[in-house]
Amino acid sequence: MKKECDLLVHHAQLMSCANMGVKYGLIENGAVACDAGKIIWIGNSDQCHAFKPKQSIDANGKVLTPALIDCHTHLVFAGSRANEFAMRLAGASYQEIAQAGGGILSTVQATRIASLDALVESACQRLAHLKSQGVLTVEIKSGYGLNVESELKMLKAAKVAGEKMKMTVKTTLLAAHAIPPEYQDNRAAYVSLICQEIIPHVAKNKLADAVDAFCEGIGFTYPETKQIFDAAARWGLPVKLHADQLSDLSGAGLVAEYGGLSADHVEYTSVNSIKKMAQSDTVATLLPYAYYALQETQKPPIDAFRKHGVNMAIATDCNPGTAPTTNLLQCLHMGCTQFGLTVEEALLGVTLNAAKALGIDGDKGSIEIGKDAELILWDTSEIADLVYWQGETPKNTILLAQ
Ligand code: NIG
Ligand code: FE
Image (cartoon, rainbow, N blue to C red; front, side):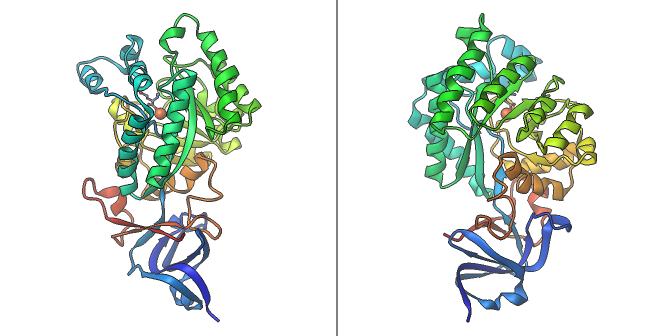
C-alpha cells in the first residue's frame, strides 16, 4: 500500500544542508516527501514510488534547498539616513555622526513618531523582497524606540508584518542599542529601565525571543552589557550581541559566557573570545554588507572561526544606517568575495547556521525528517549560481506542504 502525503519533490539536487559529512549535505537525484507541514521522508528518487502524493513535483535536476533565513535585521524603522551616506562619503565616520546625535538616534526620532501601521507597511515591503529571494524566516530587532512604548510598538510591528507576509518572524529586544536623548546624562538609569521594566514586560508578555545589545564605544560598555544579560537570564530569555564590530571589547567572549545564541559582526573578535564561542556553540554571524557600507578594513577572523569549529551565519543586517539592503543573496556573494567564505559556507550561513543563531534548528534550516516543510526549488542546476550572479539571480519557487 502506498503512503499518502501532501507533497513529493523528486529528481532534485537536494542540498539538505544537514550535517551528513558530504558537501551541502547533497543527495544527488534526491527526493523529499512532506505531510502536514513537516518533512517525513528523504531519499533517492528511485525509492519514492512508495508514496502517493497529492502534489508531485519533478525538479528535473534543479537545486532544492531549505528556505533561507535572515538571522539579523533591523527592518522595522521609519525615516531615511541617505544624508548620512553622503556625509560619510565626504569623510565623516559612523562614530562621528553618532556622536553628533545622528546615526541610530536619528532613526529613533523618526520611529518614535511613526504609527504602528506605517511601520508594518514599510516592514512588509522589506520582507516581501526577502521572500522573493527564498527567505521565509527573518529575525527583526527593536532598538529604534528606546523607551517602553516605542520598543513595544516596534516588536508588535515586526510580529504583525510577519503574519501579513506569511513568514516566520523571530523578534529580538534591542533596547540597548543606544542611550536615548533623555538619558544622555544618566546612562545608569536607562540600563535600569531596560533591566527592571522593559525586559520583564517583554518576557512576561512573550514579545521577544531573545535579548541583544550593542557593546561598543558608541554603544554599551562591557559591564552594562553584563547587567542586561543578567536581567535577560533572570527572565529566561536567550542572548545575542552586536560584538566587536568597531573595536574589541571582548563582547563575543561575554555573550559566549552566557551561552548566547550568536555574536554578530565580530570583525575585531580575539582568539580568546573565539575559544569561548566554540565551547558554548555560539554562532558567529557575519554581516558583510555593514562591513562594506562602512568601508571597514578589519575583516572577521574567518580562519580562526574555522579552526576552532565556530559555526558561521550570514545576514543582511538590514537597517537604514550601516546596511541599507534587503538583498540576502548579495550578502552571500560578499561573504565569499570579501571574507573568503566558500559557497558551501555561504549556503550554510543562511540555512542551518542561521537557524542555530536563532535557536530554531530543531525546526528549520535543513531538509531533515521532522523539520518544517519549507523548501525552495531554484531554477538552476548549479548551486554557485545563487551566490555568483548579481541582479538576475535564479528564479525560485517556494514549496510548502500545509
Ligand atoms: O548592526 N551597530 C549597531 N547597529 C546596527 C546599525 C544601526 C544603525 O546605524 O541604525 C548594525 O550595524
Ligand atoms: Fe545589527
